[in-house]
Structure formats: structure tokens, C-alpha cells
Length: 438
Ligand SMILES: Cc1ncc(COP(=O)(O)O)c(C=O)c1O
Image 1 (spheres, helix red, strand yellow):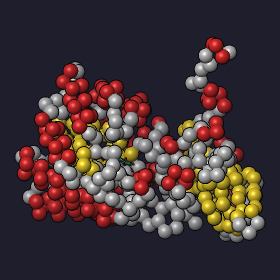
Image 2 (cartoon, helix red, strand yellow; image 1 turned 60 degrees about the vertical axis):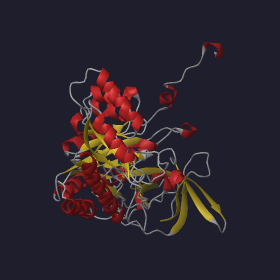
Image 3 (tube, rainbow, N blue to C red; image 1 turned 45 degrees about the horizontal axis):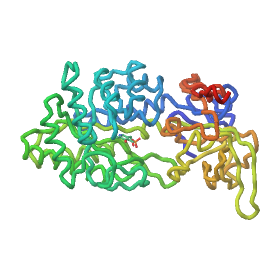
Image 4 (spheres, rainbow, N blue to C red; image 1 turned 90 degrees about the vertical axis):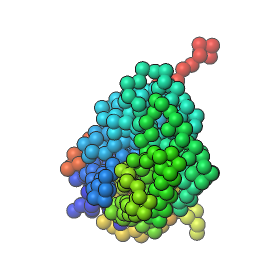
């Protein structure tokens, strides 16, 4: 069984999270239901922050693409983390809910003029410039605009590192749409161009090698490469980079075989390399920033579904279907991701039957879990799928016009609705019918 944060099996044999019995949560809020364990989320923020701070001058940003809403923004702010955003929408949301904008890093490989202007207007802490086009555009906007201070920029460097993860989640390899490539000299050209910009302040380097990575060697190796690059920049230009943003990507437990490292090991993999290289290359130790998302939000979330129909293909497979699927969790269909689950209303019973869990979309690929061992699931049972806090809500869709679930934040026996369940009227909200078709 896979229980994290405040999750436990209570005296009634039910799964409990944040002091709330999942059976009660379902009675109150229905299914499918995203449930976020506030204490678990906070513990992850603190654990990461402390592990990095113990090793040197660090800051931890939360990657908002994993899960963003007003409650999460307030928690992240209170825990003292910064925020990584990648679009005008995320930027707007952060600002709307009062997040301190000096703690925001703005990423993206194709930021529009409007998005960059918005970032400047909001006095966003740092803009992570991804390419030459963006660098000139930002310089031009600043040169022609009424900008009171030089914005701090980071350059996204693509180090040419192939991290071991799904190919759609690799971002550090040479053939990538992101960043200034290191091995072919583009990154050095980018730094020189940035130093020529009279309206921008080069504050640091950024890289992000991918997501759901377990190999600490990948982080260590990349940190060494980036430190070598800082030394090369100093030699060629005389300018010494003061901050290194090593991105996110730390892998979490979804399924047997997944072996996440501890916060301390992860921090060590980066910090040891940075300290060693700083000494060896006679550099000042840069500040280290990291921007994990999945490691904070993922384990803190579960999804509750109601079991419905059942089908058996004799000698081949037993299917059970739930009232959600690829619309609330596209990851199995997109990446072949595996998940762990149990029946929340029978959490104390051992798995006795091998079943595959299907979603309700009109797609054969809409399978949430293949071959789960569950205690003879029946219609009406509540299926709890673990580690769905990251990249589920934010990647959800209305495919087949399914309604997006509600989300509840649980803590100390209280469940607060933080996202309303969609209604059929919501589906019609932005639709228009031309008069000629009426
Ligand atoms: C630039 C950047 N930073 C941080 C993250 C967060 O990654 P993760 O959720 O794997 O920690 C991502 C995710 O892909 C990213 O693209």
C-alpha cells in the first residue's frame, strides 16, 4: 500500500486523508474528485527548502504547471517558496491572487510580446530567456517602454544531457526545442548577446533536463557542466554568473520500481558538484535555485472515482470502469504512466482480483491502470488513485464533453472545496452560434 503525508487506513477500514474519511468526502463532494492533502503538500515544500538551504545559499521555486489555484498559491507563498510560471495565464493567476511577483520566474520557449509586456508591468522577479528571438524582443520592449528598472534575466541553457525518463519528458538533450544549446557554442553566443543588452541584467543561468528523473548522476553531471560553463564565460567575457537555476524534474513514486531519492540526496547531487567546481575553478559559489513541481504536488494528491461497469473477456482480462479517465488524468494515455490504487471503502482488505481500470472516454487508450490487484471491486466502490496531485488537473480536458472534477483541500478533518465541479452550462460558456445558423 502506498500512503504518504497524512494518509492512513482508519478504524472503519477506509482510506483517510487530511483527517477526512474518503467515503465521507465522496458523500459530500461526489466523484471524480481530486483531493489535496494540505499538510503533505506543505511537508514537501519544507523538506525541499530545508535540504537545499542546509547546503548553501538556495531558493526553491514551485513549478506552477503541476497544480495551480488560489489555495496552492497561498500555501506556496506562506511556505516561503518562489513560483515558476510558463505562460501569461499562470503569470496572471499568480498576480491576481497576490503572489509576491519578485519571487516569480517566467519561463517559456515562445513568450509573446504581450506576455513579456505583462511580465514587466507586473515587475516579475526574473524572466528566463529561451532564445535569441526573445532576447531581442525583450530588449526592444525595454528600450521603448517606460521600464523603471532593468529586468533580471536568466538564460535557459540546453546542456546536451539525456536524462533517463520518457522521451516526452526529456528537455536537456541537444535536439530540443528549449534553450540555448551548450555543446555547439550557441549558449556562449547567447550570453555575449545578453551582456550586450543595455536594458537587461543577466542574473543567472537556467537549465531543466526533464521530469520524473531518478538518476541523481544526471543532476550532478549537469551541475558540473554548468559550472564549467560559468568558468568559460568568466574567461571569455570577464563576467561571473551569480545564480544557477537547476530546474526541477525530481522523480516520485507512482508504481513499484519507482525509487525516489531523499530531498537531502537530491540537494547533495547538485550542491556537492557546485561546491567542488567552485573551488576547483576558482569561482564564487553561485546561489542555487531549483524549481520542482511534481515532487511537491504529486504525492500530496489522490483522485477518487466511483466504480461502475464491469466486463470480462474470458481468459484474457477483467475490466472495471470508473466515472473519469483520461480527461482528469491524461498521463497514462500520454506517457504510458503507471499508477497505484486501492478501494477507499475497502482499504483494509487485500487485493484478491486482478482487474484493469478503464476510463469512460470513447477511446481504447483511455485506461488508467492495467492489472491492478483489488479486493473484488463492485459497482459503487470508491477507487482511490495515488500521486495524482501533479499534472492531472492542469493537463485535464473536456474530451467527450466530460465535466472536470471538483477539487477539495483537506486538513485536520476539514475538507474545503477549492475548485467547483464543472456543470453542463460551463461547457457552453464560450460558445457562439452565428445568426445565420439559428
Ligand atoms: C522549466 C521547468 N522547470 C520546472 C519543471 C518542473 O518539473 P517537475 O514537475 O518534474 O519537478 C518543469 C516541468 O517540466 C519545467 O519545464
